[in-house]
Image (cartoon, rainbow, N blue to C red; front, top):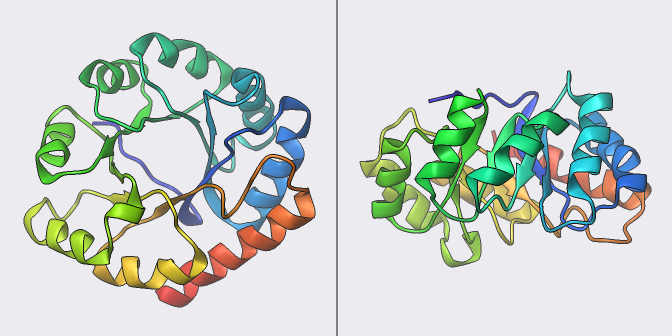
Length: 206
């Protein structure tokens, strides 16, 4: 297993739909706000170019990730572009194994305890609880009581600043944050404002 360590906060920005020409500017305000990771999903326009731009500028400060990875064949080009984290909506052993072989952390999606245990057995670095809209804090608390204490849980999907505290109190270790942080067309100023609100919510919840 490749460990996943995110600093200064375990918050992952999901920039679905970001364009290469705006990637660096958007990533800059997110990194400066204190997010620990920035993910570019593969169903974004020219995602590898965006990953490369972000990694070139911020790769020494934040963990750069590739998201919506559905095939092990998609891992290698993302790694060459500078990704250090492989995020998927599902649990695919071949994707996890390919990430591991390249020295990349993996964050597969899980929605049941069976999937969670399988993902951990396959070597997942942490667990993406997806979609979080269908998995309230009570479920996180229940999972935390039976799954290994050292394993990290990241709720993803529908996360807002107001939902940070209840999930964190239930045992969440971090969050993946998408449309509440960035939507296509959002300006750096708008993203900066949202990013600061999420970081403040995380710190206040601690």
